Amino acid sequence: MIQYTVITKDITKIDGNNKLEAIFIYAYIKSRENYKEHILDNLTYEEVHFHLDVPVQTVKNIVPTLYGNKSIFKKVEHFNKDNKTYLKYYFHETYQNFFYISNNLFKLENYSKIPTQYVNQIRGLLLLMKAHCLNGTNCYFFQRKGKDGINYAELSRLFNMDRKTIEKYIILAVDGELIKKIPNGLAIMDRNIYPYYIKKNIYDDIYKDLFNWCLKKNIYPPPREDNCLSIIWAHYPFLSKGIIELAKMNDAEPNQYFKMMRENIDKYQFIHNYLLYELTIRKVKPQNSYLTWNYLFKALNLKLPTKSQPQYFTM
Image (cartoon, rainbow, N blue to C red; front, side):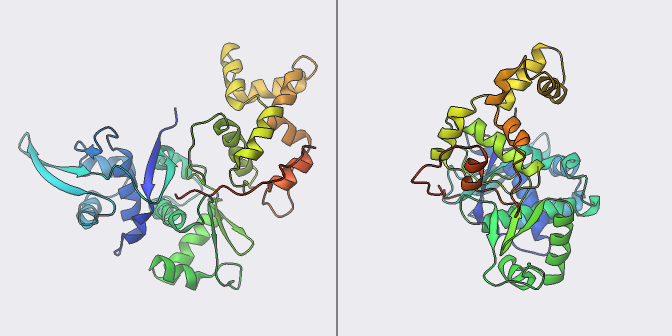
């Protein structure tokens, strides 16, 4: 089961020479929060070192710089247990501006396309960029264009970081397919950082299917709009988790089971109620790699809602 963590956009107030690693370490500390009591009192420096592959001394240098940041912690206390000194973190119950991440962000194997020595900085960069993205999206739009489509000077001022450092990490993230150039801006393509507020309703799963399919195809997904999703859901109620369940019942691997269903379409007619199948056979591929609801509905021969306004959330 996927576990989520709420990250405050006030991570933009974290500063220092190891800013990106500090943001990443804070996100990991936050992921260990007890959400009933909004505290954490069982995490040691050594555990952070072990789980994130950050040198212990670096952890010891970074964490104390986060103590006084009242926007990310209510307070941090020291306490003794078994003749050892531990930290007790107190988190805010709510945040005014926030976004969600999957805790898979902390799994090193998910970032194999990035040189190991830069993985933590790149993940910190993605979190920092997300905090500056347009609400309800994973997109940052430049105020002025750069020479190759990226305005590094603007990012340097925005992130309060050295331009050459930013340029190096952005290039690594683009090459690693975690960031994509879009007209007038950049889009985060890491599926562990969510562009939408996780709403608990019937459209969650259909949007997740569409969102993940887009990222696999290196396409930027449309912003979440429930009025559009309601029409999609009416025509395509079969979900990826349905295939996973069917595969499990037949002791098969999901991708192989899906392939078998496609090869035996007469036997599995209901597959036409599966959005990802229809996207594949209809060869949905927008030219600019940015999927809009208008393009998607035309490709699926559906009528677009007359009042289709982007739903942006304070995140």
